[in-house]
Length: 64
Length: 173
Image (cartoon, rainbow over all chains, first blue to last red; front, top):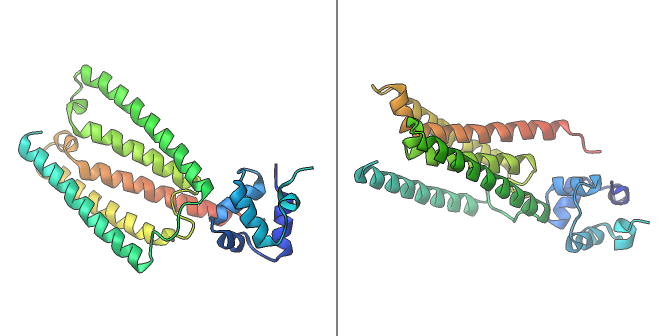
């Protein structure tokens, strides 16, 4: 399932996939895979992404 | 393969390993390659690629045993075992490249493209030279590791170029 919340939060911060990837220390393709729902990140990476985007885990990764 | 040839082979492998280690260390020191680590998705993708490559090697060895027992000339040669290793390496590399797990997040594929091109060209030139040095193609082929190593690097090169073209076409949404 696509992670549209992550994509929206990244766009809201005016960051490209590459910039977010650099901020959390992964490849751009990994961010792309998370947004497309092709890869489930570890909690460690989820937290790093949340910190980079100033969001909580619930806001970005909790599915209602 | 007699003792002198075996010693020559081992010496060749050692020299190549030492040269590669020195070059890799220099490249790392200059910051061209080796910065950072594979990220978590890449590590998983590389693990899957290793598994596939391992399975391919096992299948190849099974086929090799069958053909060798039938005494088919090519499979009687030691080089045919090395071809199995090269085949499994090619499978690993291709799988890793197409899953974006061959280069580290911070590495530049351009540096590797130059290195891979140089190694493949060198091996193909040496291999073709050996192929046409007075003996029949079949006899030279049995004993022509350079040609197979060159072919492996060409496969790697093609995979990198195709993947880069695919990535360029994919628009970030």
